[in-house]
Length: 138
Image 1 (cartoon, helix red, strand yellow):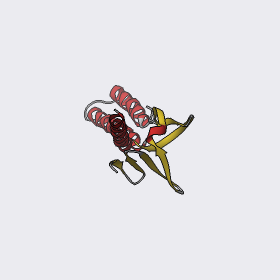
Image 2 (cartoon, helix red, strand yellow):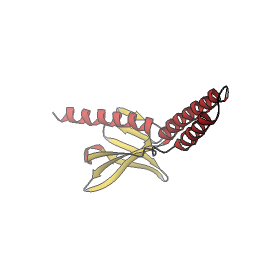
Image 3 (cartoon, one colour):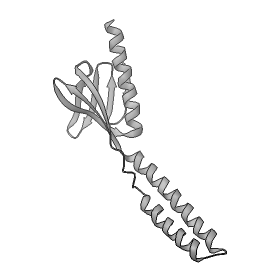
Image 4 (cartoon, helix red, strand yellow):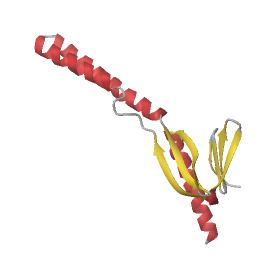
């Protein structure tokens, strides 16, 4: 049997999707799944923005009150806060999960839930398995 995707939590073959759960494995027959949809749990845009906002206030106050060497120092603080906000946003996005939902025998189910990088690879494997089944039917 051809395996299109394998990880510790999900195995996708040409006929089945196996998902590890607390008590073992949940099996989904690919031919019985329909109406796929994806739900991404993206972090809010405000993640890490508190540092950027407070630094902007500090830079604004320092720029109006100070001159000389203090102004470049304030700009460095603002640049560091911007870098922290960007890093924090990327870290939060990498740890967010996505769900693949589908209809299974007339009921809506969550087929699997994975972190974003793994989720994309698992979906590609599932697409290849579905295409293989469609090619075999024709």
